Length: 515
Ligand code: GLA
Image (cartoon, rainbow, N blue to C red; front, top):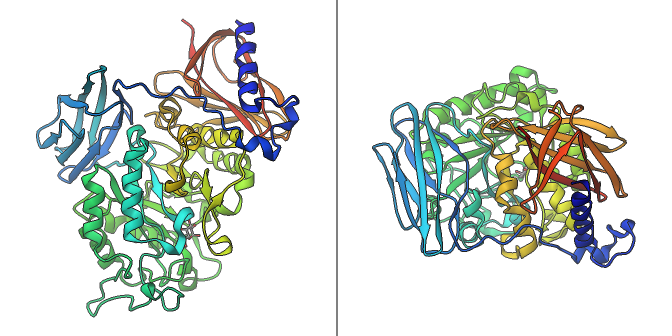
């Protein structure tokens, strides 16, 4: 069995390094173009993906596009769909109104000329939303203050055409800069903050917000928006200070499904440093206002981890909270970001997620410094590591980079359904970290079915032989191991599992106790 794994690891290293003779050449710039696609291409037969459980509030509008890979046309059906919900058999989009509180177990089915698939899906009607980490795309690290209605529509189109929506990416989020500001090079963003009745005004790049969310919803996707509790956003655009109730109502009327609420200039409204009560106040207010709306709106707290937000983010009505500052500034330390974020794993549960910030692979950029997005110099190994770490943590999976430049390699990293299933596991645990050497650690995530996900994480600059001892991981002595990126069973391992891990690499496997 060991020999079998040695073979797989050799193949892995070979695939990543292709003709590189020495392991320490993995990081050479030339190799950054050796983008080896590890995951088998999805076949033409239907494969239903997405979370196993989905929370929604009773009586509110319901919208769920069944994430399904496979060649269209696909015919969808559902057994046990509660009254009030309707499935469009061509698009696989479920709409209607969420039934009264309770749990409804539905069997989703998809069929085309190549085959069929079915899957159990639990609709949990109640107060808790985001029972699994929210997934989607946010425009910030692609468009910054150049965001427009047309770019948002294009993003929704690409989420569907690229297949991202077929593995569960769902929210299409506008970040900062959709409002007006006082001074800007772009005259389209210059204008009054509010109308004479105090209603927030989008800038001229957003002629009709309701039409935009209608467009996104028609694809079965959801729409997110951004503001600040302060008078100004971080980009200097109009914030919600003093208009919170009006803005919450407006976001609901426009049809938004998520609000990112970014602290920014709120610092000027409170003592320096702010007290814990000061930190909570704006989020308590917005959290309760969003709950009063007639639709489900998630709240993402963005205040960079102040006041141990993971301890109270859920209590004030948030479904996720950033645990640190902007990842755009520390992309070269993704392993450290993951370690820091994992320290708060105990606070995470269904409906309450630590957010280490967006997935930034492919074409990303730094707004003001570089203007247009650029290809971020991650090695292929590091792109895989990024996604592996985020899924082991059970983080919200928001891609924030230029969708128009997505290539097959990055798409493959973003769209492996078995890897995503680790993130979306209904138990909602974040992985625990076990150090096994300097800058070498294991991440072990408990899964709902009693199994585990394991990451062997090498944050060093050299390849390392790493071993996960089952006893040190708190696991029973014989484990079946599956390589998730390759979707390949490696066999049963007694006592431990070893792998050669490339520099800045993560070997991601799923484990199941051998009976
Ligand atoms: C802050 C947030 C970022 C982004 C910008 C927008 O820096 O942390 O994620 O929303 O503001 O100005």
